[in-house]
Image (cartoon, rainbow, N blue to C red; front, side, top):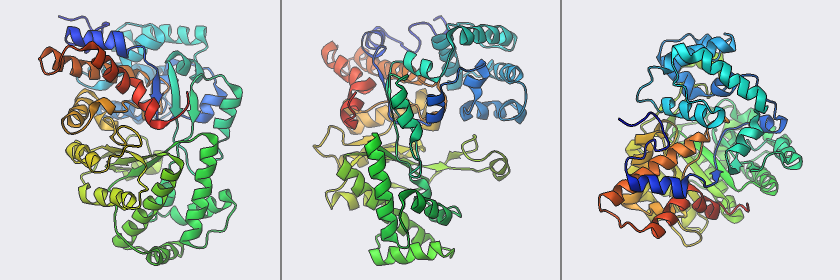
Length: 468
């Protein structure tokens, strides 16, 4: 029987062990999509206790605790921090098969030097050891980032953000990684939401421009993209529940925009027409600036109305949708390609039924600007576990160029989540090592080193073109 989570954790053969320990383990981290708070990074306040770091904003852990029947006071409520930690440990003791069990023990091992197995009866011991370590090291966001060998962090930022925290982080110089904004214009895309018209007014104020027409809107958002670009942004990100595409004229989209600003209800056709036209307009601008266009597809958000009204978005009440995406996605990418304006693009699916849809879509639109111009993004959110990540890589290997894959991202609000890069790298090395051990790829360490280091870090460094 193998020891629980030892140095060869998840590495099932000798080739996998060599690939991980010799090539992957010490590579830097290029975290090109996350939800960390730039304000917290700048203020850099030491944490008071392990609950703040473990459970603060981590909806993965909240969902699991809810599934175990725990009261909401232990997740987002007012229970004392030590009681929250005890409740979490009591629940996780039985978390067999859940990636949280591995992630959390990796967090304890890597950041606190604690090998104690999480159980109800070890909760207080871990609490005391971890808090003593936090106090002794003055554990803060910058310390966690710097100790994790992170080279680049791309946060997620609204077009109206003034990016003051990014500018202050750069000036303060306490974080070794480059902390850069990523452009996330969901509010100006979602014309069907009641927040749309008020948001457009806010965007106008921020851009210092009147927005009386659709063309005014595009001009204003282009100004914001230019500002983000000056601050160092090189990536955009879009959350698409489904993929809209309707081909309409500029005059038609102008009428749709004015209808929405007047508070009139739109048809589904009008909503999709506006969204697809706007995505194309944004994609053209991203191409001109050499940015990367990220499309996160397939979430069914805010399912629980009662809890949404109580806690807001991103608190653990989202799930996987089952839209048909192939045809509209093809039309969206093609609309940019026919104008020679298709930017570097990363496609993510939350529904694994679409793994082969995306893995085959890549080959339709590749270009020679950069290897793997169109990427199949890593196992995302609910697929951010061993089976999900393995199936994503196998689909990419079967149908494209796994060796040009830009690898893992955290997509997290937790400063401890860099252990998920280790988790990914172990899974990746085990997959490659198994193919070698099975005689499906030669024992060619020079080639394998290039592949492993590429997927771990080097491919992302080349792809995003951010100077490190």
